[in-house]
Amino acid sequence: MGEGQWQVDDSLTGRLNELDAATARAVEAGDQTALHASLEALAAAVRDNGERLADDYLGASDAVIPPADLSLEEAKELLHGEGLVPDIV
Image 1: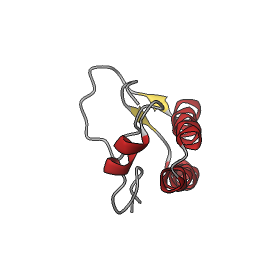
Image 2: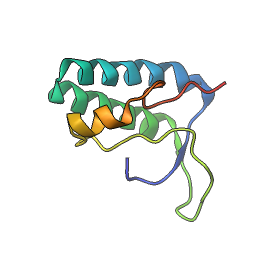
Image 3: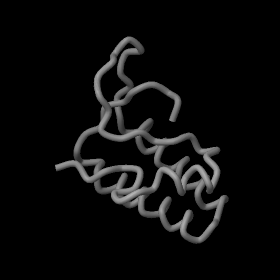
């Protein structure tokens, strides 16, 4: 989402998966407005419930949330298999 790296508790996984599914539905429907809203909601969930890591932290990320202004065409390229937020075991 262009805001650095965040750490979120595993308890947020279910909510992130719900929002990820909403993102996929928006793309399937060709609904740019719904895509924008779902990406905003994903970013807000991370911001509101996560801890921002230091700017110099360079660890691997389990998921990357794209910016809310992502186009439908760009989203179609990103959505393969597991969606934007992979199921983490």
